Image (cartoon, rainbow, N blue to C red):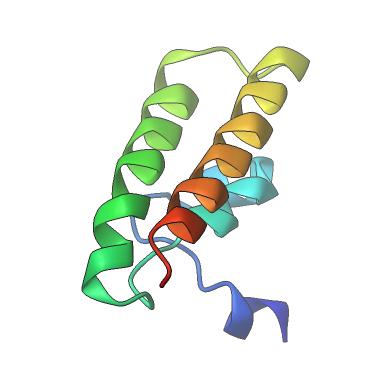
Length: 79
């Protein structure tokens, strides 16, 4: 059920998704175009974080806070 609600973003490999489940919440293809434009940069930055930083608790915090920022940015564009 969760997979249907949060389809895995194609930007991440199965291995990345299995190691960092939070990456699943950076999907945006299901959103209207205006909201995709607000959400995509956060997905791109999440991809940059997982490919350039070592996997550790601080990276997890960075991803969690990035997800919070993405959610706020998308909500700011909902009218």
